[in-house]
Length: 143
Length: 143
Image: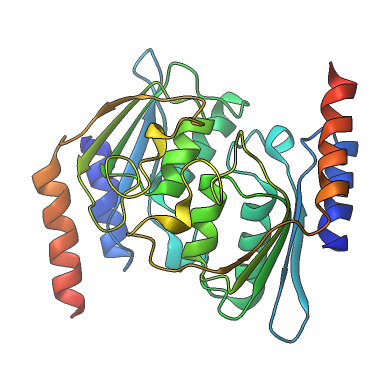
């Protein structure tokens, strides 16, 4: 989660909503790390999780990340949660919950849908305070 | 929808699940067209809608596709439905419903969540028969 938090800090420095993610394989190797780049890439899909999954898949040459875990500083939105399911991520660790935009334990609760074909193990609250403070400071500075 | 169906046919020819999409602006210009490339790109996020949205955003230089419409041959999954919401798509037209993997009128029903910030106008059933036949033929040939 420290890697993900560092990516979130780097995103904030670029003027992006500070969210960071990392994908780790079963041996503990870091396959990918990424921060949010929605504004830079002008891509609404360029959330940290999406970029990290894409990079990890490229590293493995497969659209499936079997036995890999994803760390992200904020509860994934429905788009990212579904991508995590499609990628067959084993364990999902996240920092702060996101009642407004989350789709994991809030909102559309992607993994709770009967038609969800793969559910990772879910672990929330990792480094939540630091992750939430990054977001609060970012939006405070923009107001 | 003819453009989206042509993209779906091209996807099938590449060995990809045949789904195609196109983004049209308010003046009727085609901003982007794309077919599914999950296997080719080894990217679980490379659904037709995601690729078309990314390309259209690049064309406009903005992560928001205000006043643009998206045509897709199959009901969007939850990932794509959320990306459509994030991109502020005005109208969503789709072909066949997808009770197993859809997230628009099936499954997680992304646009029905109270926390969904932008809902496009929804129009299903456009070219549904041709879209569904493409999928049926594809999976039949693979068995």
